[in-house]
Amino acid sequence: MKQTILFFLVLLLVNQTAFAQQKIWDETPDQKEQRLKWWTDARFGMFIHWGLYAQAARHEWVKKRERISDEDYQKYFELFNPDLFDPADWAKKAKAAGMKYAVITTKHHEGFNMFDSQYTDYTIMNTPYGKDIIKEWVDAFRAEGLGIGFYYSLIDWHHPEYTIDRVHPQSAKTQAEYDELNKDRDMSIYREYLKNQVREILTNYGKVDILWLDYSFPGEFGKDHTDWGAIDLIKMVRQLQPEIIVNDRLDLKDYWGGWDFTTPEQFKVNKWPKENGVRIPWETCQTFSGSWGYYRDEHTWKDNKQLLVLLIESVSKGGNLLLNVGPTARGAFDYRADKALARMGEWMKYNDRAIYNCTQAPDDFQKPDNTLLTYNPETKRLYIHLLDYPLQNFLLQGYGDKVEYAQFLHDASEIKIGKPYGHWIKQETGENDINLLLPVNKPNVEIPVIELFLK
Ligand code: GLC
Image 1 (spheres, rainbow, N blue to C red):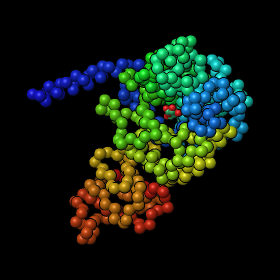
Image 2 (tube, helix red, strand yellow):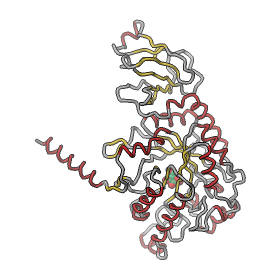
Image 3 (cartoon, rainbow, N blue to C red):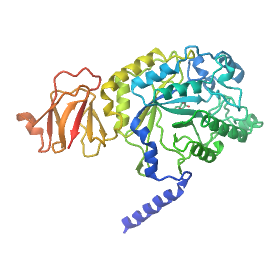
């Protein structure tokens, strides 16, 4: 009896959540899956954080961290002149690394526009550089066949009507202080500005594949979807670019159409994220080191293997990786980023089949120790990524009736499938297990991949 009541209570709750999901966008779950397909197939993208803060070279939050005033920040605006900026070179590097799309900061929290805008003078056009960086960037990345995305900061530390909040460089402590600071500021004027600017970036550069809005922080002295006029904003976005893919930082999680994918930041998820019990599209955004913007003296760079594991593990849980580069104020990639991208590219050149169009493996494939599994549902191939190269006998438990052929992915060399042979292994082996006979020497690949052709 108790169980039945519980069951109906749960049912009621589920129903209510379904009801609470208000519709902003008329699209079925299937249609959404189709719209996102190129992106979920792509799996690997480049994030680019670039703005005036590159000159400070000590984090894109430098204005807030050091509580720099507009006057003192002005020098970066007056000096910005990236003479080495060569977007074609950036695009080539992204492509060579195996990335399929890229997302660039059109405006970060500092409020500076990397694009030409009719709604403010605080743009790239009025710096010594004087050309629309976003236009040049879009042309170059499109030419390489990469998907293009715009990051746009909802937060703005320069706009005079944007109300001071807890993440602002002039943040305060008490309500009275905030009241005083904000007495001449009118958030509704900023709201209009935000909408106008988003319209500009979605109108002036042709088809935009991704919109990456950043971010909401509800609660005390924070901002939520009402501050941004988010519902109105997203409706305009969908109308201007019906195929665009939008992240989930507008604080519209309860609205169908209010977001397309979730964005675990600098965080490796344990398992495929869900919403109301349903697996949702996701992309983790990550830095090579601790900062998004160029940071000269930051030295905690991840190594090649860590970066590859990050990519593979994301795919193995059904997600994407958006890996960040913070170019210098001269417009070049940091030498450490160049090196990291090149090395990932080396691996991708021979192993990208285990990344593109791949996802989490079906549950009936048991993951051997020290491996990650990815799976291509269309070709029915399973990929075993060997994070720690094993000794010859590589036992696959429960795979016996499922595997037709096995090879290394990087060189298409056959891996013999043996029946468990010999006294010791027999003791540990079940009816439906198979044993792959691996060479003793680890192939010359950072993370070797076994490709299994399934029956
Ligand atoms: C954050 C930070 C920011 C960065 C972003 C990337 O929320 O404010 O500096 O652009 O995450 O995900």
